[in-house]
Amino acid sequence: MIPVPANANDEPRKFPIPANVHAETVVSVKHHTDRLFSFRITRPQSFRFRSGEFVMIGLPNAEKPVFRAYSIASPAWDDELEFYSIKVPDGPLTSELQKIVPGDTILLRQKSTGTLVVDALKPGKRLWMIATGTGIAPFASLVRDPDTYDKFEEIVLTNTCRDVAELQYGDALFASVSQDPLIGELTEGRLSYYASTTREPSARNGRITDLISSGRLFADLGVPSFDPEVDRVMICGSLDMIRDVKELVEKAGLVEGSNAAPADFVVERAFVG
Ligand code: A2P
Image 1 (spheres, rainbow, N blue to C red):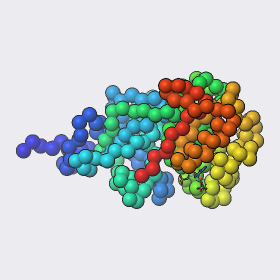
Image 2 (image 1 turned 180 degrees about the vertical axis):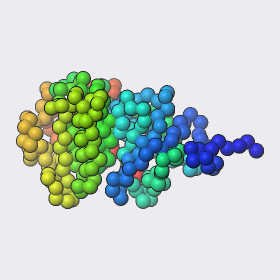
Image 3 (image 1 turned 60 degrees about the vertical axis):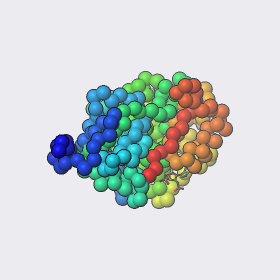
């Protein structure tokens, strides 16, 4: 019999690693609420991506493992890869993924892709990153990338969640970015963070769509409302949220862009399941 290679915990592998897939090691796991967790894994040297992109990940727990698209939450310069995930009790991947511990193996496909990249936007002055729930993940990558600050003078990250505990990942991200030795200085006076909750009272309440429609978002930040000459927008959340925010930015005259045809705003669905 051919010996089966051991994983980082030195347990024999029950299933082979599929061809053309990286087998990476879980470095750390953080459970934020009973619905949300984040984790970091080793990064293969050959794995390149643009901040804001997603990649397919899976677990080595079947002959043909389930792979799901996950936004990479760490910036392109980071030695490790970070992901931010919902836990779905009967989700095909997250029901198992939520049990990972340091030392476990994560499968990573080789190619990353996605539209929430600065290259899919025309130059502009102010970049809005509109996130609900785990939709903040690609923006966690972009706000930590110096490239984002090269291309835009101002960046506004909005984070809307059901309750206060769910805001924590975004709150901690914003706090850590300003302390970061690499980009802390770059973000000074240029990165704004705007959080709200919809199902529990907090400092600011309401769906981002209502905060946009009422003009409160702009009034609170002291900036004019969306203007195609000035503003670029990235949207990440549920399908309903994307549809509704998209309608609002289109009403303001912004045009949807893509990698092939950069324009004023881009959208991507936050991972579910
Ligand atoms: P709400 O609590 O009113 O549903 P989820 O965790 O379900 O993805 O939701 C994350 C956040 O997105 C919640 O605050 C939720 O508000 C909000 N949300 C859900 N649907 C929409 C939508 N169509 N437009 C704007 N925000 C939405």
